[in-house]
Image 1 (tube, rainbow, N blue to C red):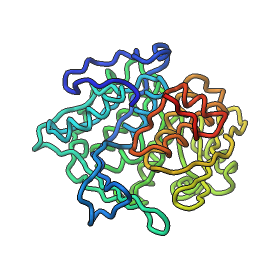
Image 2: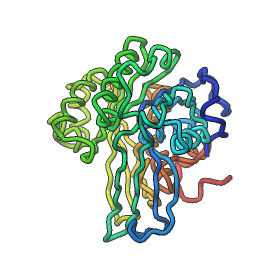
Image 3: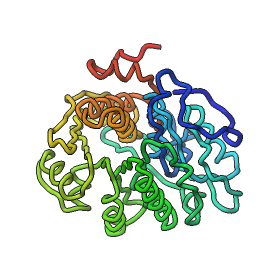
Image 4: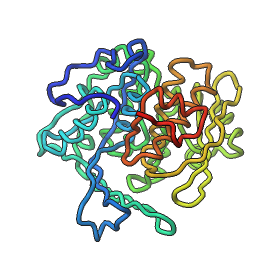
Length: 357
């Protein structure tokens, strides 16, 4: 865990300061999206044979907020949760990792539930499988205007949203677009993760939403396949970065290359391009995989941390991002658990053996 827990319903509003060393002068990042309870059969067991389930929490924007706290940046997670044990469980997992939850909109149980997802972890030749149970969740049933975005974004350095938030429901998408509009008006940097979940919506619906939001985005996290599918951008990794930067109008865009070596081994390299036109890239890194979920969110947090500290230092930003992602892959659950010093130390050496408490 990256910080200490508090009560989710009585926590004070985060004013941008942090209880972690060196974080007071770092900008606060606001994330908006859904988190769910994650239920995982231990020991790579099949779900239909499980007798116990490991209970954690996870969701793209909350995962990113937790990783930002590990990197000593203040982070606020905005969402909607029910006033139930399940809702409070999710909030307490966020607060246990130092994330400000004062922006949560709490609703009675009849106005929405907490989402659940089951993760069945497989190894070659059996793939992992995710089963969602997220219909009628509290955030999917919010009404436009639920959140006071001018207040929530006041003094923030960045707003982070993912494609998953846009997919949850029409009303969640409207609220996300309003958050982006207010961020643009207030001069708050907007970062967007172009992640697509086919279980949530169609390619055509996602394309319409992505085309609407990306022109209002400053930092874009994408994949070569995503840029091809949704924006008809093709070519080498460097080519798609340059075309995306020129055509989409973002200030910076980053992608990650993956080479699988079985289900438990990966080689990762990340690339980024900004307005300078100089291609930045991390070294290739070998990763032993314990849990893949949350790796992309840790990457987003690492890149944002580096970018907010120095928008011209993309090589450092993309290396910090790749390192945070690599370390997350070695840990169970959706959340990164590491200190800024540990992440910095791992930037120049292999991840194994670096984390020493």
